[in-house]
Length: 234
Image 1 (cartoon, helix red, strand yellow):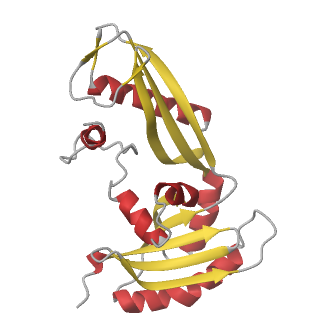
Image 2 (cartoon, helix red, strand yellow; image 1 turned 180 degrees about the vertical axis):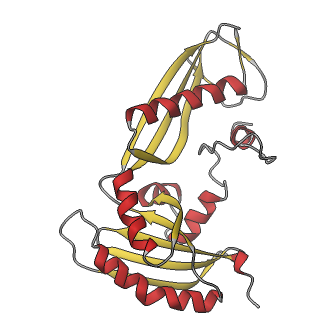
Image 3 (spheres, one colour; image 1 turned 120 degrees about the vertical axis):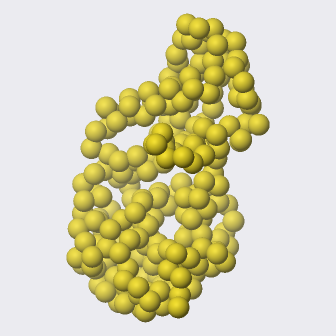
C-alpha cells in the first residue's frame, strides 16, 4: 500500500507551457512528470487547453498515488503578478528594539500592503534588510538600543480574479489549490538548473528559505517564523 503522505502534486502554468508533477517528498524526485509546450502570443491563459491537459494526466497520477487527487500546489508565471519592495520606519519610544518589535513592524507592512492592494493575494513576503538607527544588523539575538528601526520587505502578489479563474478550472476536476508560488521567484532562489520546479517549491514550502515570512497562529505550538528567521542572522 502506497503512503499518500509522501507524495504531493504540483501544477505549473506559464505563457507557453503547462507542467504537472507527482513529487516523492522523501527522495525529492518526481515519479510522474509531464509537460506541454504550445504557441501563445497573448498574456491570456488558455483555460480550455488547461482543462484538457488535466483530463489527460489526473487519472494517471491518481493511479500512481492510489488515491483521488484533491489538492494541488500551483506554480505560476504571469505578467499580472506584482513584485516590489516597500519599507517602513518606526520610532522606538522604549529605546529598546527586540524581536517582537520587528514582528510588529512586519505586521504593519503586511497591513499596509493589503490596504493598498485589496484585490490581491500575497504569494511571497520576504525580508530584504533591517536597520536600527541607520545601521545594518546581521543578528538579533537580544534587545538592541536604538531610536528607530527601518524594515524593507518584498511582496509578490496575484490578482484575486486570476485566482478565481484558475480555481474554477480545477474545481471542475474536484481539485483545490493548496498554495500558489511565483515561478520567477522560485527560479531566482534556486539557481541549480538541474532541480525540478516541484522540488524547488517543496523546499520553499518546507521553510528552507529563512527570510520568507510566515505568520503562524499563536494557538499552534510550533516553531514560529521569527524563531526560524532569526536563525538566519545568528
